[in-house]
Image (cartoon, rainbow, N blue to C red; front, side, top):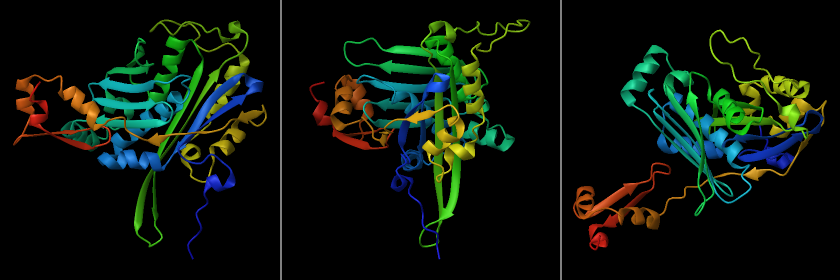
Length: 328
């Protein structure tokens, strides 16, 4: 007899694809945590990415969900990497109030060589380059972009550096990705992607408690780079104990994980925010781009009088007649 699957939503936990804000008053910490399941499966399965690429993109998706849902205005938050490694581009963006999309670009030959040689860690796949965080508040507003180098660290470490340099907020990020293999109701093998993440930030009322020494200056610089405040040191140490299994286990709700971490200090969770796999592309939007093409560009893009454009994010293909652009 097959075991019944427990739905965490039925137990009044947030469940998958819902970001949970939290606060630890005893440590002056606020944050957000999430577990992604069906949404992640849909995005990764749509493109059938190789395993190492899927893992990288999953981390970017989790990071985008955690940070994008913190926007207090209508807009878009984008996480993007550009590097010289086999995976030269990762893009994930969140559009308020709840839409998430993502894609990755990679060199098949370079990736195959990297896998063959066992060079599949995130730094090896991304190479040298930059990680950019972009906040776009829409028309009439100048987008804000923070850029940090891809320096051989993990995405979660680089995200922490971004907040320290750009936002002056002590921040700890944990990201985890896992593949689950089981069987469906008919006994057929089944593969699922899961991912989870948590971001914790030190936000005391007294600004001087957030004071941090300068970043390490390089070789020979012996300055301490640790945050002075004991509360933040404790919070950060607790977050560092989280392992991938805890972040991705479908039977361990985010609320339960937060209680494990912070119950001695008093953790409070707030209403979760659902995120959806939802692309912002449309036939009209793409047509407006094509309307800006010259007659020569339209001619070069057509085949047998037709133009086909496929969205890199959702893989939807839009078809147009060249005659639609005759006045271009």
